[in-house]
Length: 306
Image 1: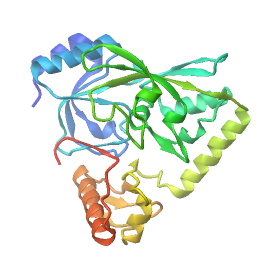
Image 2 (image 1 turned 45 degrees about the horizontal axis):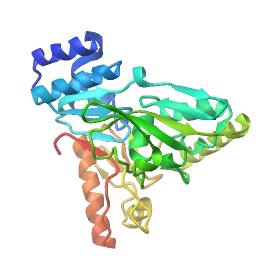
Image 3 (image 1 turned 90 degrees about the vertical axis):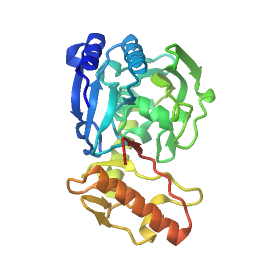
């Protein structure tokens, strides 16, 4: 339930135009589904993030940091708290051409940054061009594709600590592993990361991006809303193959479907609700466990009540 007094306090911190109430989360997630968030705020400064979080602590209101919403499923009942959106105010990058070091802000589109740097002849970071998330989200998850992952190019990260301090540390202290880091299950908020990139031919890099994008179009259901790979890769297996070998290719529950093009993707085929998608996740896990005795772990973050 929205508390309008609380909403006014958020507006005083971030500006009225940066705050909305009862915001449809379907607008902010790549699954294109989900209920209303009580409050949705797009701060423009680090100090505003601090003040919003302080207010949430004081008023005992939950909060969640969101970037591009590419790895989230928000419940149909929505989120009873504040979605803090790191958007355009926290986007962009700066490149030192002499050193080949790019400082990238958390709200920047990962794919957009990759393409921009490739056009300037800095790579090889092309494997990340088709990942639909924000740069900050990619750091949190140590995102990867086609044999590449963030820890190969990341040299240091700056973040907002839980106590409000701004901390910078080298990448080798961040416990970057398969889809995880020190940020994954903490309240730390990634603000910026630095990448060390090699000078290369812009034509070759852009050609590589186009080649990988063509592969994605052929093998992934990009024409439907999804969160990318739904499950983490179980040790010794491939998630998509396990799902296909379980006879679930094309399986539907409501508007949710296991992609016929790539079984590692669960898609919003036809106005799926979050409940449809969640029920299909659970069905997949149960069938794979029964057939192969393998526990499937979601890569998608669940927000709200399921």
